[in-house]
Image (cartoon, rainbow, N blue to C red; front, top):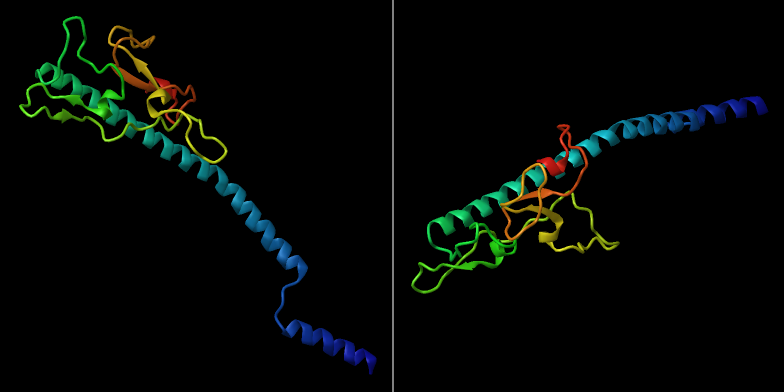
Length: 175
């Protein structure tokens, strides 16, 4: 009689449809393998995002520098004879420059805000950026060579200060 009760309890347990410990361990192991395989893909996607942000930021700033130079060449911005015609600082693109051709002294703005270098790591513990956006970029003056960019009296070009290699095999500071 006792043996029949034991078999009936085992049958009752199997009929409830629960999972055994082994089945749960197999499922958890498979999920861990899949999660580990997905991590490099997530890191790659994150790097691609940051590279796209860098491309966009460089394009925005370079277009603004070119627009500033064009405004100087058009006589809309005052330029001294010994100046190159490029902005003295990146902040000049945001704060605006008086239009000398405008009768009511309008100000010309070239950027709404200066984008930060997305490759510049300077977040504090709370995730707040410490460095001003203009200081996150490397700046090249009109008088310096492309191979050895140096800051000077003006801003002719900008570049990332990161020496990390991008997905295309080129260091970010060479973009």
